[in-house]
Image (cartoon, rainbow, N blue to C red):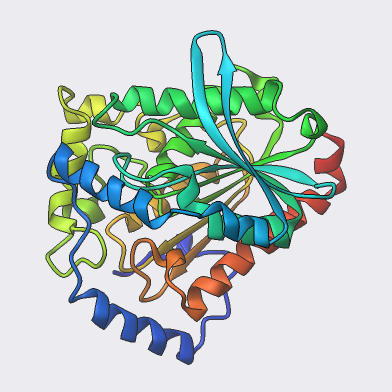
Length: 333
């Protein structure tokens, strides 16, 4: 899919021929694999159960890396949500609020432990990952409320020794929608929103009625079941018409982004959600600086594959977060 030159990223990662060859070999394997699609609540519950079984003893890996691991029930009043905290033993420079993906219907905070452990070590930060309720068991509004509750706790009270540190929000896929929606809702508390100094967003969903790349997605889609995506979004927002689905904060693409922090965005050119990220970057640039990277041959979810390209993307994210936390202006906010 060709991208207008006006919205190409201002800087590019050093993707070379070896990276592309490896990505193409992976894509041949992915083409033979089942695509992600949740057709009913039973399927989501089965996948979630298998995920939890695969995570047995997962805390040990983070602890072997020298991190402390803690689960907390946080919030104020009647609003509570579970979070998972990973942090080093020594002082930190900032806090990352992580919102995992999984199509809103599967996943948990622990599924990002490997990514978050690497982030803690590379950036010298603490990571608070939101263990939000899943859609199917709660309305999508409840999922969004959990993310807002976690952010309000972190920005108002949080961990005492980190209370005055800058915060970076990170979201992937469905977590990208939840991160951007959370930022929009935090505009009701401008002083708290200002504490968030950056956003790192991987291939998010920003139009719940479906962008053109979602609507055009064909059967050759990798990882995601492209033809079923629109039906999946409609099922998640049952009872709404497309005009209502495009209301912010449900669809962050159509929100008022004034006051947003700088952002770093990644999306693969073989992702049905390509248009979501490209259009969101265009909108975000009206309010703040955006660094957008379009990754050739990369499918949805590519940061979870052990490829050279994924390693370069994650290293770029770590450098970007580190540069933010090194900025004297950010430290004085």
